[in-house]
Length: 320
Image 1 (cartoon, rainbow, N blue to C red):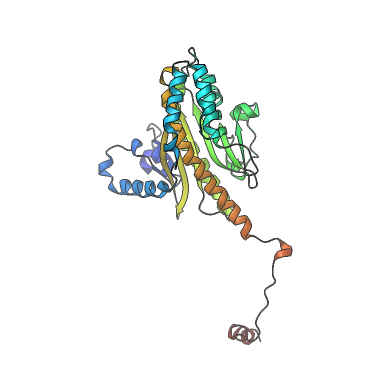
Image 2 (cartoon, rainbow, N blue to C red):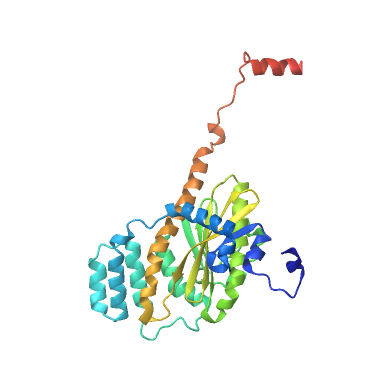
């Protein structure tokens, strides 16, 4: 791989670019001849079982209602849709997403040919904002909210950005520490071939975030990176479990409806976002537990030496 990197005419794949930064990409879809790499497959299975604890528990009770409401959007049954959604027992965030999809996917609407800001504004922001509303712990930032292009977006939002020139297209940030727990990079349908570099960029960005967090004493974080490639969004989890090795695990894929006729593709988002919400909450708990473990200066108890202990007497003899 080193010789390959030295050759300027050879295009380096995502796995190798990330490996040079100490990041192991665990994505079966990106690996050819996977059966020839049993160590890789075993590592993938181990990570998959680790993240199995973050399940979309309870979504099965209302997923059929979501499917029926998506069908009403597809058939443009506005009156029936409003009645069905408003009278249902669906969670508030699910109702909010359904209403957003209804407003966006008219007969003439299509994501074909739109730019990345439109994908963020029309599809990702309504879904992510519903699951991650601004509160005492979290704040969301997106290009349309900041009224600025991502290339000139401010960089003071978290400590890791000293090594990066710009923010991601969308971020969920922990308020007290200013660390981003979830970030999104989006590419439009016509530019989705360029999103390969976004996998590398977001992997390195989250690695630097983990380094900055660990320097402040926060251990065990699992940071989320979403990379939009046209009509699909790959979800990655980056963490630092092993010395000098960071893992970047592909957790799942969300599918964006291209137009109203395939609106049912949006159903994958409801289950996956429930899992992402649990992972973000898991990270918030780590920050809160670390905060509770730290005492204020006036709360610290001064340690008093036991002058009668054997350790104290031995130390005294060495000094005098």
